[in-house]
Amino acid sequence: MFEKKLENPSLGKPERKTKTPKVLAVIDQKGCTGCHACIPFCPVDCIEQVPGEDPQAPDFMRVVEVDLDRCIGCRLCAKYCPWETIFMVDKEEAGQSAESWTLRSVLYQGVGKNAAAGGEAPVAAEDQAVEAEAPMPEDKMPEDK
Image 1 (cartoon, rainbow, N blue to C red):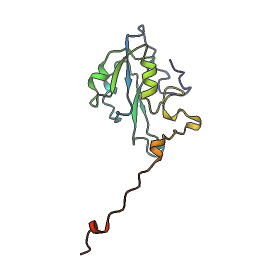
Image 2 (spheres, helix red, strand yellow):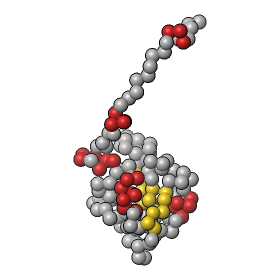
Image 3 (cartoon, rainbow, N blue to C red):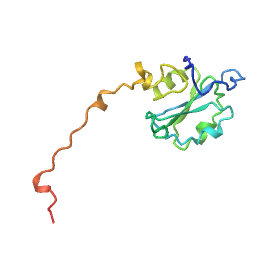
Image 4 (cartoon, rainbow, N blue to C red):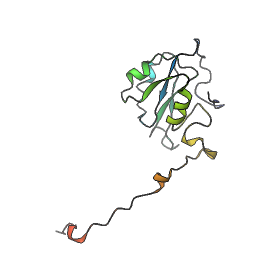
């Protein structure tokens, strides 16, 4: 699937003891609020916290990520996600889905928007354009009191 980072939160945790399930949990991080409601339901502890982009405020904009090598496909995380942002994906498609839905990864190298050289997130062209606010016409300006 993906090559794991040398330093990652799953180090020391047991490997999956069963064969690869038919479906794996994949989190669409664009909808994840980082509430961590899914974490206590995972029986194999394969959901990892991903800190926010700002090292000074790691709890701001945090998300979670599933270790696909350890997921047993139990569906509990997807069932209890209050934001409905965890999907059970066919094992053959899970890697591709994870790659496109992951914004930041603490587990895998080259996955997520921070996978660019130097860890810097590439900025999409539509994110670069800042729409200038049109000036308010003088006849609509609030009157000074």
